[in-house]
Image (cartoon, rainbow, N blue to C red; front, top):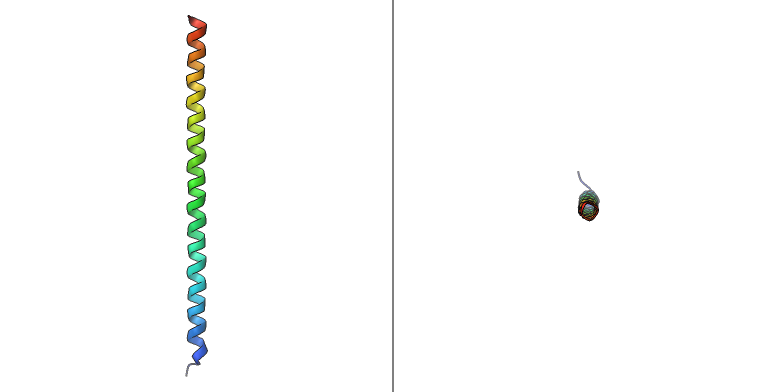
Amino acid sequence: FCFPYTSLIIIIIIIIIIIIIVIIIIIIIIIIIIIIIIIIIIIIIIIIIIIYYHLLLFIIVT
């Protein structure tokens, strides 16, 4: 036979598991967004450096 509390406990456990999964997913999404932002910043910096370098070369050559 089942106690009335067992179903409640099971429901609570399921809710806790769902909350933990959601938190993990949110953390992963945040990490991915941060990584993408860092990559974009690095690419922009590289582009700026390349452009600057070419401009310098152009100025020196002419």
